[in-house]
Length: 115
Length: 112
Image (tube, rainbow over the protein chains, first blue to last red):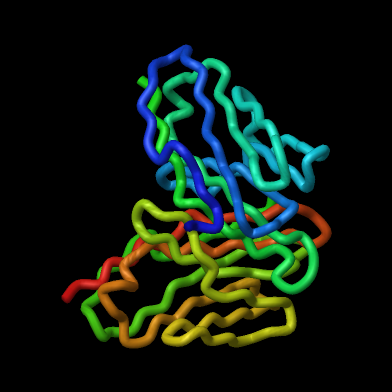
């Protein structure tokens, strides 16, 4: 099994629909992140969480919300999807401390298309 | 503004040839720089990390260099293989923060 698992891998939806992308990890890392990747742009941070009770907005949080259900689970929601949220979404984790403290481990990505 | 710029945007080379990818950054305060490989349809995977005091680091056929004075890094791939076809992303960490600044990547295609 992958260290960081994202579901669904692909999703097509319509404008106005609510969408949830889920992420689970077996790395035991405290820190989890949601990034968005668009063609021609670097990954942009949507939200990050350093532990279950700590959730913070990233650079592009408008239109998104998150939930950290457990240390291993971090979900991203689009309350009312719009076409410009069509993108590839990545969940990532990092240890935060010790050797390799800021090495990011990424999931395989969730490709979302909003029609 | 913290930025990471990569060049070229895309590159096509023949199998067994060498190539060098470039990364220029304006990130302060600098913590470290990593190169990631992203295969199509997959998430990025870390290849190597460079800290402020390191000039060169190798990982198999991949060799990364860092010039902290000019704020430039390069990733050299030796004797390329078809499996090297991927995007290579340069990522700089901002010291004392959670922030990672991502480059837009170089898309490498290796032809037989």
